[in-house]
Length: 570
Picture 1: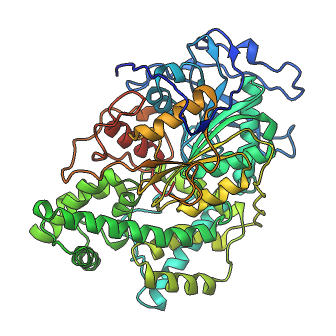
Picture 2: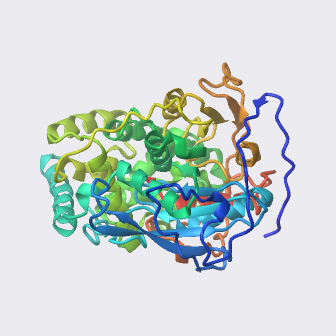
């Protein structure tokens, strides 16, 4: 990729907040964090990571290390576990400290994300940071690694939508079996998983890096993890970017109900897009007819799974990623049209293999997802509550309500007691920069407004009309200029600068155009060697080529790569 410079200038509507920089020489592999950033007076300092090269073809400067953290932070002298780290070291003489990155989940690996962020930011901005990825406890290359029930998502599963009480009970039994298997396999670790524990791990990482403060960049669930860390250690936060914001008021049962409605709206947006490209797909010009054809396909694969492995639950898993990223729409539409119009099951099977199938890394990611969410907050323990809520929600949002219910249903049977989510409201932080698309289904818009209110000096940049999840470094130049300026100088929009256009926003960017009705070729080598914890790597179609984003590489390619790293249900 060609390096590209970016001239940073203060926008006329922005207030500039400057944070100090640390002058330091670049750190080679094997070296600790620069001495100028160390806090020798920190009584709880831990051993510095020993960095070794772990380059991939996509990220040739990537380095790896590990750090030991207490299994139980209340007993720091007790059993230790290992976290896997990655790093792209700074190269500029102006050093702004470590930038920890997290892709969400819970259960997502951050090792490759460090390389992606370092390559996607403007070169002169990335050069000022040590970009640090990490696998949270239980994830990927961290040890111990969770795997509660291998093959839990093997096809062909039960239909997610129960047609009678017996069918529903069969899925209830399956969810309970997962929870019981997890308790049996990982009884010693489960009580010590959760967002608070992961945030305390981040503090150990900070001490190991020897930095008085950290910078943070989190997507999706990573926004909640960052907010919890900031609540516990506000004086340790220098800058923080939170993209696609979890609603702190909905952790976690209510958030999933809100997702059900939002994903149904995104599925309707997909149907409308297919209808608008009837010349290409031949599924009708009326979005309602296209949507009806999709549900007809669902009924058909219930009777006879497509390609021998795509039943109705697998079909939902295949099309759910389209609710996260519209770059997948062309491929999904082609598979849809081939099945309905030509009776050809092969493209549908291929789309499932790419977007829906769960491999060993996916089993691990899901195990951590349940372990964290079930521990973080209380869930209904009486199945009648789930049944009533899902029945009512399915009536208005049928696309994924029951599928999402079974994804989270192990929490109804989880061993042990749940924690009370912390109040993440915070007046002690420097300005935090939030990014949110108005039509994001995975983290609906109101959550970003709620977090903006809770973080006293935060600013919210909105992609108006956008429906993707994870919007910075994905090809939108307007968003990426805001991101780059903040990381370079601390510049944030004026508070309330966009009020009236989009509720709660401080700055507004237009969404990228919808994709063309043509599936693109797969993205290139993505450095998957350093990644663990997401579903099978996804190839993606384009979204908004021709971006003037300040980062490096084609915006469409970066968008596809980002969404592969973020995974789904993240």
